[in-house]
Length: 165
Image (cartoon, rainbow, N blue to C red; front, side, top):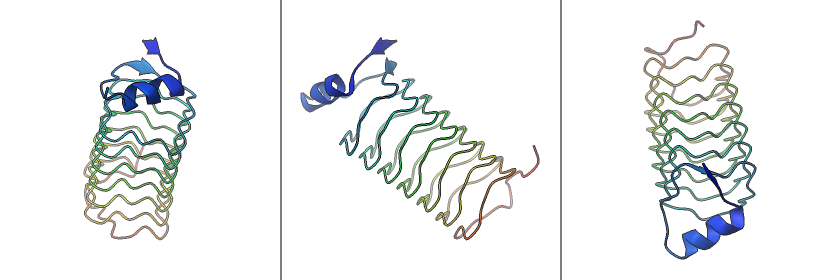
């Protein structure tokens, strides 16, 4: 896996490159980065710092995002299926229409996140904080919600979700 610094990534992105599949950006500092439509499939972004970043329409399928800071990030229509977001901070993130099918969000902070029409089917949300999150029309089919904080979550449909470990 090729390692890139945040500066190298931003320079290549600015020159028009969008395909960065299987790169190592662990611990990268990308505060407010505009990376719309980027392909980071199967990349390592563990403990990266991306608050207020714009990742709308990005492909982060099967990415490693454990402990990543994504608070207030724009993740509209982002592909995050099968990604590992364990203990990631997604508070106040825009995840409208995002695909999180089969993602590991255990212990993640999704406080006040906007998950309108997001696909969370088969996702592991055990011990995640979804307090005050917008879950209107979100698909939670067969999602694991044991220990999940849903206090004041809005428009939650739990009929096909699991609460037992």
